Length: 272
Image 1 (cartoon, rainbow, N blue to C red):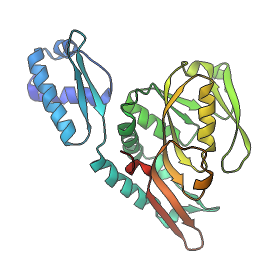
Image 2 (image 1 turned 135 degrees about the vertical axis):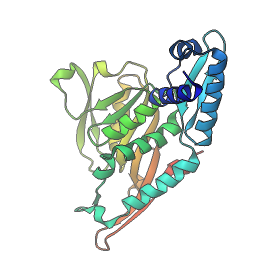
Image 3 (image 1 turned 180 degrees about the vertical axis):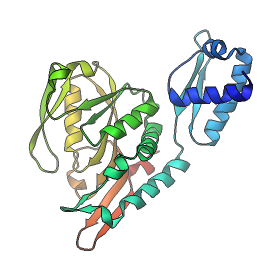
């Protein structure tokens, strides 16, 4: 295989298999190339990934040495995307009765969810995440997008048990915004004990849902390493039940009478 063809094939492998460790003999056998030539190929790909702000290749030496792709969206690319997301969400046409905000078009757009997943994954890529957890239903597309870049499975917390999922663990929790008692359920087989978990949700008001997921995950002795929310509401900040989280945008004001929405970048841009 020519080097130009091999570079394309290798790049495609890394993009399709993030965080998956492979030894050089694996690639040498597939592409019929020497380790020295492959090493040069990896240098080229690594340089391009870093120049484009897409991440880097982590390489290890020794008998078990190899390479894996760590996807990271640089701040130079993340910040403009988040600013563009804020502008999209400030469209007055998104205002719904009751002061809610229409976001289903963004959550249903594969390109948008992919970019959101890439941004979150860049922040959480070094946390040794084993699984991404979300609650049904609107957070599911985001969870899969994040998981695809982290190279881990998705586990979905539901409001009621499903016969097809076997025995489950359930808890009652208090909704942060309505203060109502609600239920969360997670099948026993879905999450190994002691897993490192990343929680992803589409919207957070007071944080009752996220707090409920944290409590449910404690039943599995899981370690919540990260919490990511696409949008957070700023009007209930004093009652926020969650302290450690990463948000992409912050909705500061939804004025139905003036037909006006104020959206700012979330704390993602503030963290270092």
